[in-house]
Image (cartoon, rainbow, N blue to C red; front, side, top):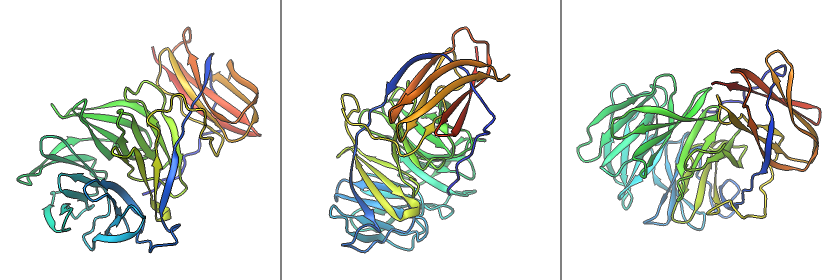
Length: 385
């Protein structure tokens, strides 16, 4: 399900002090787009929601929300049906020789990767909207239920299940297994969307960081432990470093809406199902963004939510400029008094991280306001000591 951008009140304003401005460098290559842009083969995708890579057979598998079919995409970009009429509308996950599918209110199904035969079907009492799947190294599956706001655990061997976590007011959408830290990483589908963690040792759920965005969908990790997530607020993908120590970096935008993304660690490829354009995009990702001399220039003007928020004593704002512009980035307090002019004057196009040191400020609400090309963008920040 898609959600539109939530506009911020134009009368809200901000306050801070300038520490440094750091251009963010991101470089990737669009390998190809497998969907209705392919003229050589029939497009079988119909609102693709999730995609995974089958290393054994060198192909991608994509679920389709409107048909429930799983479509296979080979290395030449040709489509074929892997399974049909099984209500496989949402998340996919491969463990061993089986691909598991979250089938909304039809349960969790598993299909043999060689034959396509149904080898598992687990119906969960009270299931409402099963959405995404992950597995650990102990033979368990974890499936999110975004409408029931729960995460279920399924024992693959005996196909028994339990409610592993009740997520309360933050419905779980995307999920992946972080083996290094023995935890699940969860993307919340909510107006206030944190990245959460669930300890597999005791099933305790906690917030890692506020993403800065609303209505998250997919979440995945690369070989270095960096965490990617997609959001329906901006139809974009962003990346946190493995320690969540910096603000999320903009990675990719698609007007079709990136859904349940997947990182192919074998080839360093980020697979992006653009749900509303019947397309899957494959991005060849760099192993590191450091040292690149090329910039992935943004296509819009945007002032992103500061990170962290709440903060003490410092935080960062990310500014994206599609074109060179005469801008003003000013911070105000709640009474509308100017606290700091962070950036003024003519700035080149690009992406900027602006660090703010709030030392000496009292706790409270502040507002950062960007003026560029006669447009205004505002973000609310909270200082807590």
